[in-house]
Image (tube, rainbow, N blue to C red; front, side, top):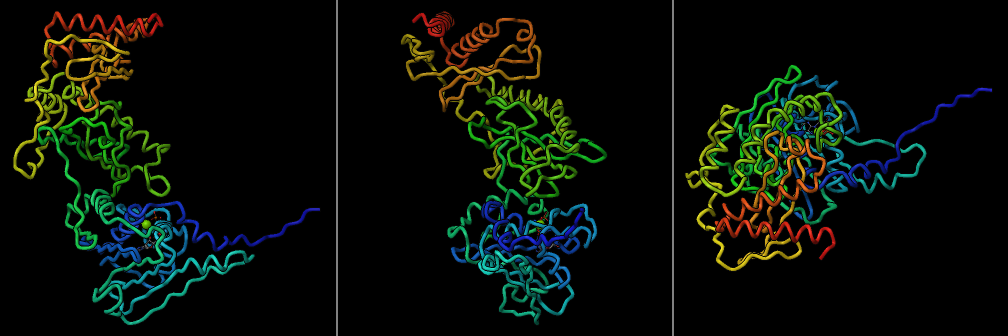
Length: 478
Ligand SMILES: Nc1ncnc2c1ncn2[C@@H]1O[C@H](COP(=O)(O)OP(=O)(O)OP(=O)(O)O)[C@@H](O)[C@H]1O
Ligand SMILES: [Mg+2]
């Protein structure tokens, strides 16, 4: 006998609390709320968004179009696709119908939304107290109801005397010590294109400003590439410094909002490519859930990836060139020439001091080695003024002719040797271990002679010693 029974599968009211439990940090949640404000912009009007943070209360208040009762009642539902209700827009950042609720729930347990629709006579508000929602939990058929109140605009309310706009106020905060500095930085970077076109975001009294870049020669190479009927736009340049930290790569934007900071998927990552910085707009690539990145399984991402790998090849070469061997101003110029050869360069505004920055500010401190003997201990080179570690890695430098290359990191006291997986020698030899060792020896010789200005005869002996000791120790004969 077959039987059918339809059952209620209304989610438990705890869901409201749970959606925020692990989703966003404070800066991420605020970015989500600000993204909604931009989506609600009236035509081309410039927006002013005010964010305040205190241990008791976080608020995000905009002067965008606001919501009427019908929109507000849809806006507070989970997963409602507002595109269907509001019509599709090319610039809309919202996609999933979850951002506001998830962001509010991750900030605190009580939140109110007050909104004045453009052209309307009233303001509407709704409050969520998640403590109440959690109390309702456990019932088989819990109520999923909220109460929208309408009244004449209250100048003493969160929207003050604004004609239109929305205020989101969160109390009973989860993080009792929200940091304005972190929010300022995040928001400044996240909405850079908007801020540059005149929208203003205040965090307390401070205006969010996008952090500046410090580029060799102030040069930016413009990127404007067709891709799947759309375009990849933006720029790349070379940072004046190599980076041991994470702060290099490309900042990837979608519809004016930063989705990935310092992405490194389009070029091989090592110290020599750690000067590559830039901003790329991938408006046509779908974001992943929670918009913390792109949907990397999508056809759009895969195509953009292929294009960007290609486009960045000369940049990788230029970065490598700028980072190679001794730091000289000539290297600097040559790196720019490589970039210029491949792209239409764009001159960045000069930096605040009005001077061109040089990658090679510490050039003058020449690394002279005195006459004391060079020793090798555990593979480390002991020079009179310090130890140098020699490390090597295998990477595809995407140029068949270069067997290996190296970069010296003075802060870490380390020579990083990169054995080029794409080189002819790498692909012709059977003994990669020995080849790598000889490559490292070659780099070391170069380094001692050209960067440490060591007498060639002495450098040669030091290289031989290093090779000998390293092989001895490696083969356990020590
Ligand atoms: N500041 C605001 N001004 C006007 N309308 C808003 C504002 N914030 C939210 N809304 C409305 O509420 C809806 C729901 O917002 P929510 O962030 O939850 O989802 P979404 O933006 O549609 O999608 P996503 O989950 O991708 O952010 C929005 O689509 C928008 O219509
Ligand atoms: Mg949203």
